[in-house]
Length: 625
Image 1 (cartoon, rainbow, N blue to C red):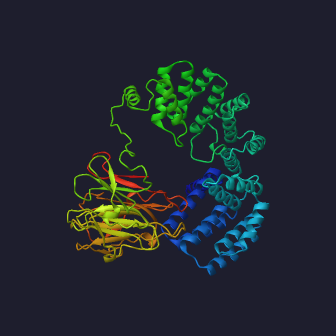
Image 2: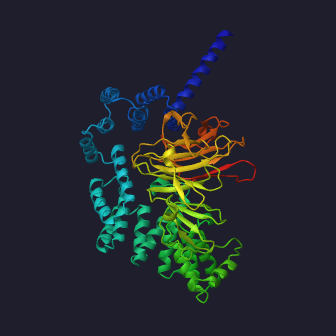
Image 3: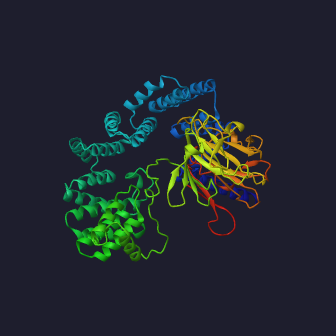
């Protein structure tokens, strides 16, 4: 009996082992396991468990020596853990020897050597990169280098310079992942330069190189649409392409670099097809194509074209309705909304004087019962001001709010709908400040203000209101002026003494990725402030400064003490400083889920935030942009 039981257990063990081995050989199981390992490494790096992170990275590379992502984690580790050059050099010899021993491809060995040389700031990295680009044009390092250049081209303002550099880029990277985007940027630059000869030549090249690429087909079709050329040819091509892509297993990565869904991109292609049909007077076919787009994917351009088609059929009421939807919806680049607005004016030219009658008609049509606004910029005398940051406050207590621009321009409200620039009379110096915030720092009943600066010449200012229409610079009595680039600030009461305290969020050194520390200043109730940054524990996790852009005070936990949310940019994590009953602060952003989403060592670009009770439940909610 015992033997039978023993044999059964052995068979059960062998069966389970076979099942386990079969499972581990399953590609999906292996992929999930690798993903789990990488997530574990990310968590160790995020929480600065550097010794364990290094061990996990070493183990990952040993088990997966040909996976470039393992080495990328290694170099990210070197960066965040601040590893010495000597230790990195030792690792370099170890890893390159390991790659040679395992007979891994030359391309991998060369990429790893390049990354080591770059990390060690060795000039030989340049020649290694040149070799990689020439011999391995699609490898990870080459592709990353191409991506960095493409991102630079995206923000260039001079199309002549951009076109020239893109021409060179396409010679160096003829078949890289980012090559199609380079062709698109080149077409865009030639179009802006109105160089029809080069545009035509480039369109021909793109047509030949990418005959089956849906993204490129749509791009070329748009340029021909603008020129009313090849309409029939591209009608056929776009129709065939949308038909072939209209299925559930379509791979998004095939056609688009970005985060648009398949349905969103199909809606874009169908719009192009509808425009091609419209330009050939095939109005019914165009409308049919537009009607195939799901309602949730309809954008301003779709409503605009529907309205335009309805105008040709003299269906003015329907056209007006759709054109108005286009205007109300708006679009990212403000291209289609103005076109729709122009057609609205054409429809009802008897009311289209741009004045009150037309606006009233539109509001009645749309059943709009919300507040109405009128642009009075010129009437108020503010049309010539080009400042970027504004703060409202009644500095002279006459019951009318005045305006502070950039912390150095004071506009007095004349109580008749106009403003007067009184900065000279008020004694406010020009200064290189970029924003101001009002607060009655001494509780004398008159608003004072802090003016922030990004200058390295200590140009932050604290201005005391003298109560007679003038201000006194009292900056020298407090340590608030520094050489740092201040981009955010906020007043709030730390300890409930009813005197406003000041939190200043600083950015980075002149565009370099060298983040600057924030500061907290406690109001001493005598017109001066004390730097309590360290004593109140305003110390970021792992003492890593972040690129601050915004400050918002709010009692998020209803304990009667104001907390501070700091919006941080540059893919940095946000802060939420929990006020410890006026005795100090604790950063709880990660704990309560407002730090940001961690992805590959980065968080998010938070540039501004605000507290508010969104759902009227009595506690403060938070919106971040």
